[in-house]
Image (cartoon, rainbow, N blue to C red; front, side, top):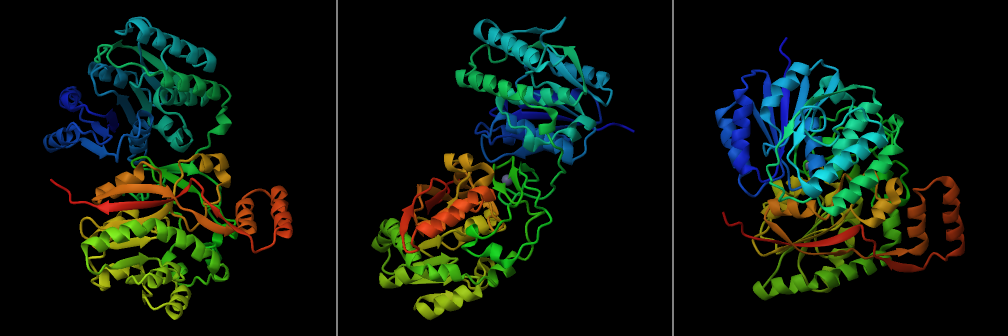
Length: 554
Ligand SMILES: [Zn+2]
């Protein structure tokens, strides 16, 4: 049987090289080689060049990621692709010809299906063009890494490497935490800890960048720090995990890797886990995955609850009704924030139309009413809808957003609001696209959501209270731009979403996620603090985003 091998190349602005490199690989004349190019959305036309090559050759695959997500992450994507497509071997190399393509034959010759092979500058017959500072950093870095981690290889940092399938399958990408140079070191360290054999073949490393690119000092510092962490890492800290073949909720790529594992797979959810106030009640922490093409952290579609719409229909959130006064405080603050955008719209149009997706118990709708503004609220929960209908005059519709878009032929909204909604939707990309269809250029989409890339979320780690079954997606400050930009929205402002909350309730909600020996504190606090005290909370993980729709000029 012919063994199928993948050559994986990560690119960023390699328009000038990629054609010649691909042709040289194809000229080797092996029929069993596929080529994968993972590009971080290069602005120089690399993608178009690869698409041309795809028309010419049928063994070229292209993954275009949402933005510059880093070299370590690009290599993860290559390994992931080789794993899910069940290649017998993976060869990774750089796109700039610093790795001579004629060595590919050598890699294939040395392949014994169970050894890791690396092209080495630092064994007999190997050499490197580097001079000066870069040469010493490279030699010293390799020396320190291999001595400290006791890796039996003189080369540990180059990415010209061959992985047989058995090794590929043993790598759980979610647990490889390093990026940059440290990523390459962590991979080889893992392979060594797993006791696989490491073979070196000599290479002459060509310095194509002619010493122009510097090694940033921060990168050196970070790699050093990572080395120390790796020194204390044992093989026990790497657990295997099964592959997730489902498609990302954001970019639809088949690129989900493990992010946080709570082993809660078989717990049963009930509708209490899906009420708006569930943060303080549910004890279920869902396993999280991260997409390596768009960086969206999410509950994988393969293990999230089915019939989520039905769950939302049945929600009865008495806690919310009991706290309505406080909710008005929160949304009066929100209204102040969005008022300038309402006024901007009013300057242009005599009558403005507002849509609130997920109007819940109608708090914001009532504030619009008081300010003599026309709004439509759509809300899937029957209970919340009935309550809202009976308590304000604005138009309410008990329907899911999908159905609203399909059946109601409503367009031309000047402002679309969605507070605490987007993290609950099944398909983030489709949601933003649908919002875009409801409005014309220059109008505003204003929404709130949770961000995972801030000190607060990092500090709390697994105890971050927003990790609950009803939150399907967790954004970061970078990918929210990309998702919106794809559907012609530009972000005008991102600011903290200030929530008012009863002090006792907020503390209970936060402490609920901690082990029971800390939980007794919450009982103590609710005993001491009278229930009526409330105060504003402005946490760095909940944000209000104001986006404007623009006209894309092609
Ligand atoms: Zn994605």
